[in-house]
Length: 277
Image 1 (cartoon, rainbow, N blue to C red):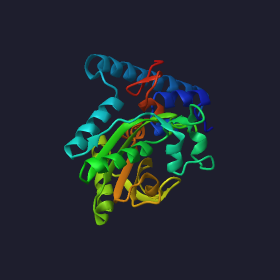
Image 2: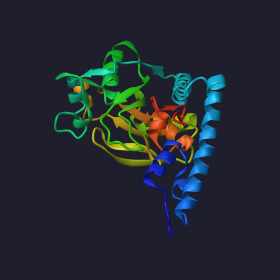
Image 3: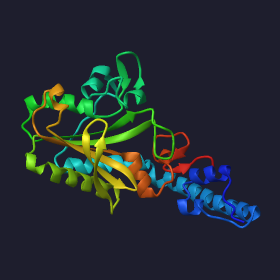
Image 4: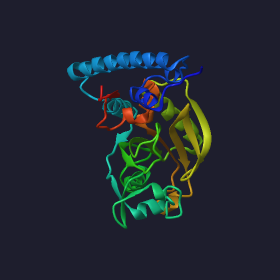
């Protein structure tokens, strides 16, 4: 007889970040399965408790916080300036990104009132900064932001309603250097995150059209370049590149986690460890 985990057991294994290979085990009897489940749960509960003890005594900062610092230091060393912009943005800013009530992303936005929302992306604020900084600084203007974004994403192991984005931008570079710079920025982030053997794939975005996506089983980042049709609404004419990454997904892939929730802001997990252990 081919016996699999019960639905409750599967959920518990996923919560404990037990590998997909172990989650796909088959058994000859229910008793064999239940014994294996008890043994696995005991092992990973012990492992989780041990990690939390180390976290309290020595680590003291969550994975997400540590990755943010590592990325900030690496980008600063390469001449990029960090900015911090508001999480509440105007409806008009989204409209400039072509996100109106007919756009697929519109229904995923958390609206505060008729004119304001929680930002679903970092790009509108970075466009605004570009326009002013072009008057004040000589190009190329290299900016990045690490900040929380909000979307009514479909629930599952790959999506969060509240997630952390890194956007890296460079404005005013030569046209013939844009592709190379996108690939360099992708390589930098993946190196800092500790992820190798990734792929770059050209695909299509509902906002930017053609994009260069960073893949390792799942999409980890997405890059675009301009001049772009959106630029005129912001008064931007110079060539640019921009690439964004979801930090929780980077951590999920690096740590071999089974759900992105364990890597994000949470009351159920701490440093990737489920707290009901």
